[in-house]
Length: 319
Image (cartoon, rainbow, N blue to C red; front, side, top):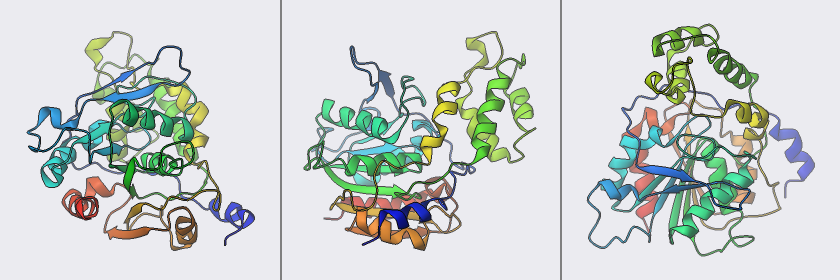
C-alpha cells in the first residue's frame, strides 16, 4: 500500500496540460447549458447526440449511453466529427458535454473537480441515463475519475458501467505557468481594438509560437460580428485565472476510495501524462484497469482518430 506521504512527494512531478494540434474538422453537437434555480452549482445540459443522426432501432437514448468530457480550454466542438463516427461504430447514444465555464455552458464558481463531477452526475440523473460509459480527455478525464470515485459513496453505484481516461492520471500536480500567460494575454487582447481573427492570432503569436496551440486557444474567440468592442471570448478568463491551480489537482488520495468498474487508460506514447511511476496509484483507485497506447502526443483522439475510435469502441461494446 502506498502511503499518502509517498504520494505527496511523487505527484509534484505531474506534467502540465499541454496543447496540441487538432487535425479534425469538427462540428459542435447540439447542446445547451442551463442554470438551476436556487442552486449554487450550474449544470451542463444536453440533447442526445443521436438527435441529429439515425438512432439504432432499439435505442431510447438512455440505456448504454456514452458521455464525453473535454479538456481545459476545450469544448464539445473538439469531439464533433469523431462523435458522429463513434455513434455509427458503437450504435449507442453519445452525449458530448460542455463542462462549466467552457463552450456554451454557464459560467460558475467553483471550477474544481468535485463541482464539475457533480454537474455531470446531475446531467445523467436528469436525463435518466443508465449503464453509462464516460470518456474524458485530460481535465475531462479527471472529472470522469472523480465521478467514478463518488459512485457508491455520494452517488449510486449502479449507473456507471465503464470509464475511458484519455492521457491523464489520478494525481495532483502543478499546472504550467504558461497557462497564466495564455489567460493574461487573452485578457489583454480584449482591450487592444483587434478587428479580426488574423489580428488576434498575430497578437497571440507574441507569446505562443506554435500555430496549433494558437488555433486551439482561439476556438474560444466569439464571432467579431457579435460585438464591436474588440475580441471577446466564450470562456470566463477571470474564473480561469483564479482556478487554474485546481486543474492540476485531484480530489482524492490513494487509499481513500476506489472504483471497481472496468477502466481503460489510453496513453499517448509521446506524452508524459501517464508515467510508469503512476501505475501503483492508478491501481489503488481503479483496480480493474487496462491500458492502451497509441503513438501520439497528448491529443490522442485528435492525432489518431481512427485508431482511438477502434480501441475505445471495442472496450465499451465488449461484454
